[in-house]
Amino acid sequence: MSFAKLVLKLMGWKADNRMGEIPPKAVVIAVPHTSMWDFVYGYFAWRALGVRPKFLIKKESFFFPLGILLRSLGGIPVDRSGKNTVVNDVVAEFKKTDRLILTITPEGTRGPVKRWKNGFHRISKAAGVPMIMGFIDYETKTAGLLKEYKLTDDPMKDMVEIMKYYTKFKGKYPDDFYLPGEALADPKV
Image (cartoon, rainbow, N blue to C red; front, side, top):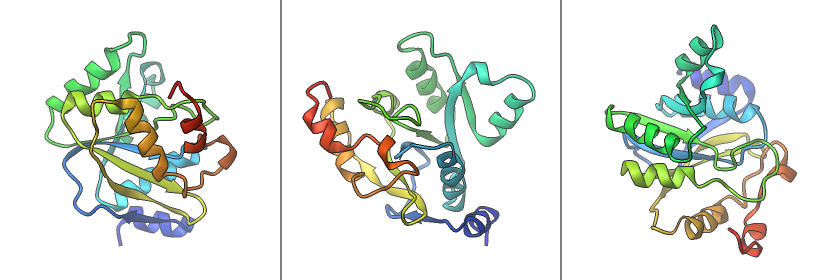
């Protein structure tokens, strides 16, 4: 048993890969994201599935000694000051490596939001890598990968369709999760 599987087991959680073979490069969305614990369970689940995940974090967090820990866990520092800077920086990361599984939380924060951010869509399309739907479910204490979602050129339509898959998953704080019913009723999404 791997260390990651052992840690998950000790915490009462398990990893679940419902999609089969994992490509060497992909953008994985992790949904729902309502707690800092999502990172812990998600990180060990990805590792138990044989994935060394990377994640974006603001460059200001990479001060000594925290920066060393963040990089060792897979943190990629990003400058969020420009609109397309993050997308361009991440696309460059994809181009300079043979393996990169980037995990993004489209909600963008742990608290309730009125709409998801579409950066995962823009990065996946611009880098030419698949977008995989990842999940964290506190009801079943499972985290893992659902399936690859074939993105179209319509990010808003894709987000509404993607959200429909997540109605059955429960975050640690379910009231903080933005559900598809609300998305379908919101003309801005």
